Image (cartoon, rainbow, N blue to C red; front, side, top):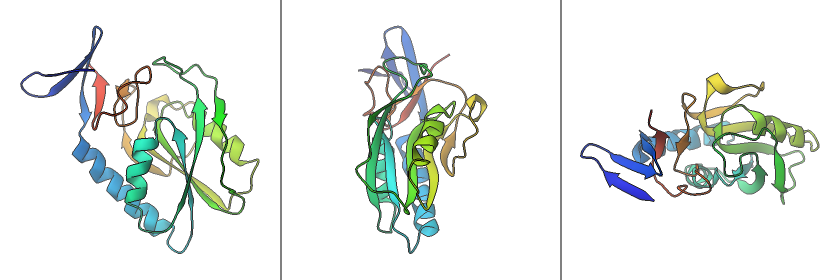
Length: 187
């Protein structure tokens, strides 16, 4: 990872591409705290199962559950639709099943980013094979102009334009997930 300071902001260079900050660690943490508080209020008296979609959601989910003040259980699905590319292949593969029993349970799906809605649509079909009491979706980032599937995102961190982003769980060829801020490909 090549990080350089250009005098006014951090810049990340990957090959001949330059990434600049889009959302700071402070902005992200403030919004994640608000989402955790809202989920706590919405699920008071319930025991939801919070299901992260690996690999991208793991940092967001970890910070989110730290801000949820009610008891909850956690599990993970692992899906693949990108490989090492910047654009989705359009095919979703299930790589890891759930361990938790979600029948008659309140489920919150946690995604890092929703662009076309393909992965959430796929998860909705998977959920139909169970009988959850309810299912809601939390996503750190949503690209409203890119949605191709009719999916509802109940808890939205930030709406963004159709731009390639990395950091805070979002990767570039499986790298850069560990950045604390979110960076966008510079025009």
